[in-house]
Structure formats: C-alpha cells, structure tokens
Amino acid sequence: MVFFKKRTASSKKARVLKLPEFPAAIYAVGDLHGCLQLYQEMEEQIVRDGSGLPGTKLIVCLGDVMDRGPQSAQLLDVLMAPAPAGFQR
Image (cartoon, rainbow, N blue to C red; front, side, top):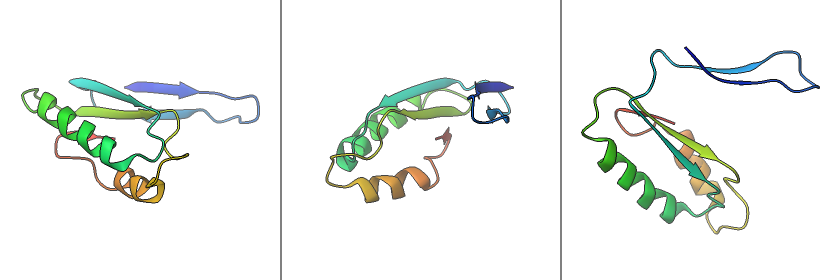
C-alpha cells in the first residue's frame, strides 16, 4: 500500500512510504521543537490509547522536530530509536 507520495521539481524520484497494511490508527504529532519531556508524555498517552487496537499503529511527527527546545539532540535520539511495541514511527 502506498501511503505517502511526494514529488518536487528538483527530484525525479518520488518519496514513498510503504506499509504492509493500513494502520489501525494514525497519530499525528506536530511541532515538537526539541521538547523531549512533552513528547515522551504524549507518546505514553498515545501508547495507552492504542493499546486496545489490534494491528500496527502509526505515529507521524510533523513540523519542526528541533528548534528552540532544550533537548533537541535527545529528542532526535528517541525518534530514531525503535518505536514502542505495536507502533511504527
């Protein structure tokens, strides 16, 4: 299944996110701005919310991940680590 496709004038190849099946839930999180603690609290709420849903759940981070927040590097480490069980990031 193709979920995301983006083409730009400067690139000839499309960027495509392929998922084996449609996710049971999609959680969109915007503008993290390097706020690690707030993201961790939000991810805990997302995991609790999705725990009763069968299938894979997807966490999508939109907007600025790092910017003015105090823990941009640590937040990047968390986002690049494996997602919680049953989730993809």
